[in-house]
Image 1 (cartoon, rainbow, N blue to C red):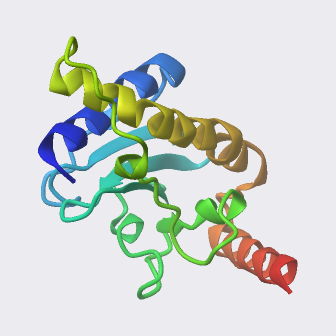
Image 2: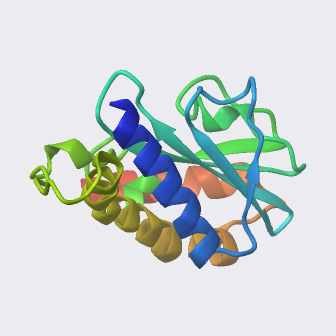
Length: 175
């Protein structure tokens, strides 16, 4: 993502998380998450939920990755939820399926929106105004889907069962 827009997404997302989810803390993901991404953590039933703001560096979009771990460390499965089976203490979740009817990740594309042309404001303010509705939509998805999922549906005693039921439910809804 162009530097000015990537910076605007990160800055706006960080402020929105602080505003809406005061119990979430930013985590240093050095060496565990791609450069330019942000990672947040909050206590959940039986462990910790992680949300990573993943900004595609060579493209003009971003997504959210969701993970859970019994310990407070970042689950590596958050980066590769479709890959090899994660260890039993950590899982990556495709919660995006709740708000995204397509297979795969849901990506937000702020640079496909109409550019803001106003010579009276700075480039960084133009970027902030352009990305704001997209980041607010991502924050609303966390509020509407991610938090309720981990508060009410998730079973930390048998996280794989829950994940399998979740995937089966998604497949049956699409048939």
